[in-house]
Amino acid sequence: MDQLERQIIKDVVAGRTERFDWIVRNYSQRVFALIARIVPCREDVEELAQDTFIKVFDRLADFRGDCSVATWIYRIAYTTAISHTRRRQLPAVTIDETLAADVADADVDSLLDSPADADREAALTRAIERLAPDERALITLHYFSNLSLAEVAQVTGLTLSNVKVKLMRTRRKLYSLITHED
Image 1 (cartoon, rainbow, N blue to C red):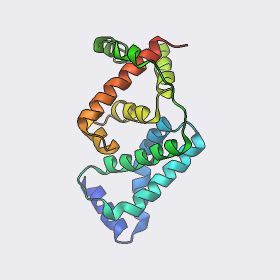
Image 2: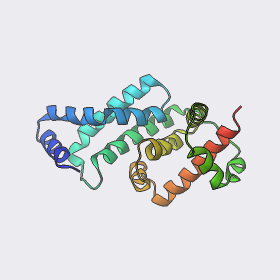
Image 3: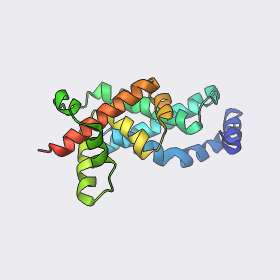
Image 4: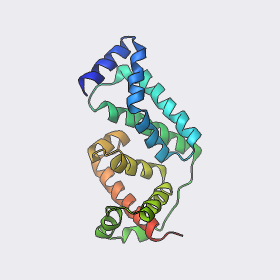
């Protein structure tokens, strides 16, 4: 945690609540983007982003500093969005797991890590939208928010090895969704 964030947290906890605006301005776009990848309804995303910052404000005094402020805020946003999707039981596409399991890692890497063209980007976006909320979150946190696997584990509450396995399965699922589009 940098000095500025440390001071802002101290100030807010001490009662200078106007300083919380800096946290909202600094993290709102990232929180909104993460939630938007997990929750499909824009109105819900806006409400959940607000809920996230209310929770951050309420829990600021409990922040221990054992991870970055960003990771801590992502954890709250992730938990808020995933809880929402579980309550709403939003549908996710199911695919034949044997189809995804038979995909070679090299094929997945070739498709997903190659330079993007407009058609591939559109196919990837459609495929990500069809994933389960927790799978979309993993992809978003690691690839779009550029969090390390260890940081993704902190945000999601999963073990590092579980994050690796789930990310590998999700990448294979994406590959299958893209190559077998209806």
